[in-house]
Image (tube, rainbow, N blue to C red; front, side, top):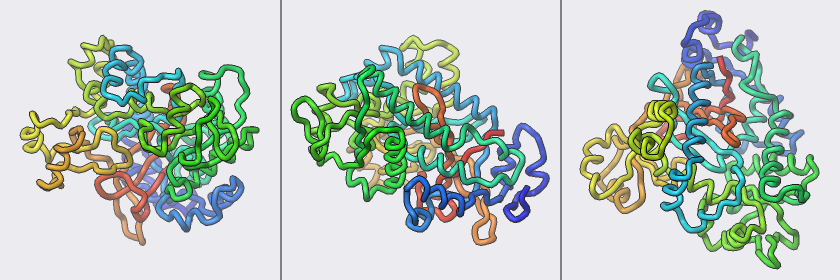
Length: 429
């Protein structure tokens, strides 16, 4: 253990028990981020020369620990969900709630699915599923800039940056082959609204450079610059083969998304992830059935998977005028989220609700989910011990976990405005 970095007691680091990950998260204050090395990596990868200045709460200085048992629970929960989502009755029900743009399934898997968990209740609890989950590229950088201060940190969760980059690129290449076969992939567009103004724009630059390093032209663009002509998607006179979709217009219904959606519906471009993926994975109404034993039985789900899912997904309800009074009475135990929400926007803890906000919820499309108190990560802030909330994001492709990352924060939901918070690399015990 490097003494200059260590804020971790010997008893916390050396004890081997079933709760070692919890002990480390509570009492290990080691600063494990080597900022000089991270700056070197950022410059080498042509990301940003001043990212740590412009995004001071993007990366936490400390690592997060997850027990091998919790990792196995997370894995089996994801695999069970993937099996349920593959069932035709589940897909039919999910698509019946979705926009018509989501009905087209081009047969690809969708890159960077994100499963978010709280470490609680004896096993990790799934809070939500996201398509186009952000942060995987940046967390690869972060993992490569760590100093091992405790024996459990000697082995990272998965792979180093180079291997992860290779896996990420192969994922996009596989998406292309699933829809296009052996036709060469020439050009990728990374698409988001005003991409240069997006908080995670630096990772767009990482992705762009990875594609270029692998011989694929790559541009970063807003959807307005796209046009659909001659059965092809174009951007500034160049044909686009594949779109890495970072839009939060999940159904591609915005006026600015028309060209992209027209090309997608015509099968003229590979779009990943796409409206179909959001409908079957990320619409939060899906959690109602995924965590309900009766619904899973009706879908014909295997008993083993039913037991896994009901143990790992909090009870979730659709907010309706019929159950509004009951949900208001129970609000202190509930968390309210828009069914197509993302990034914690317009999400509310029930114990903080006002009548005004409650009336807005009733006018919208919301789910109510039993609150799962997040676990905590001990941290030294200005030489004072403190705690931050944490959640765990599993980045997956075709049901396989590629990378785990923690997000440390204060407040109702994850954010990148907390002193000492941000992305934290995950190590398994």
